[in-house]
Length: 84
Image (cartoon, rainbow, N blue to C red; front, side):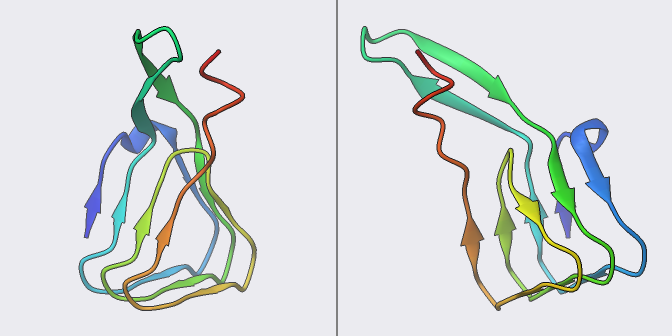
């Protein structure tokens, strides 16, 4: 697995990470005026969650307790309202 931005990741108890899971807590977003801006958001994974192999969890995503994330899933957060 790969954890990017470890200091922005919050993980509950008894979480299972499948093979090749990636978590990241930052993104570079283009504003309407063309400017690029760095967005950072905590990524949260609730207790007893199961993240399937090769899942990709992006910044600002909150995985609820006891949730099952499917194999090869990609969970993203919308940055539209934050990038203005």
